[in-house]
Length: 119
Image (tube, rainbow, N blue to C red; front, side, top):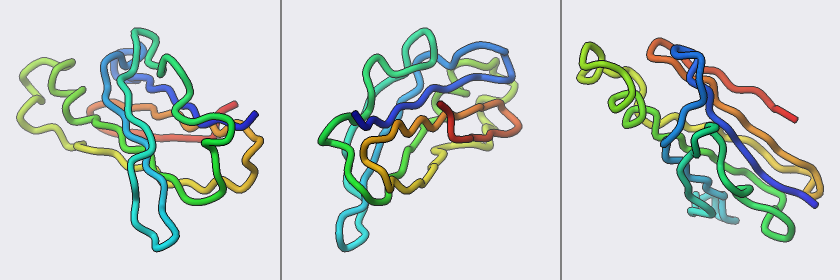
């Protein structure tokens, strides 16, 4: 069964990023992004359930939007809260095989972020 999942690690603290808001958008036939799912990360930095699974996973372009700015402001001391570089971090990816597991993690810190295709 196909599914789309994510998790967020706060590499600045060496811990899961709990309480980060995430949206998953899917591009429609005319290219407009439409909200497909939204959630908050749990104490393990993960979503409690897959963002999409089964027949909900369709071929096409998707975009994860991580609300990193709000997370960083509430997590780190006031020294960076007014100067947080990151706001919403978009990660756009393509689903070609609807039966596969697409796991797209985010590694975040006040000074940078990265992603990869997980397993």
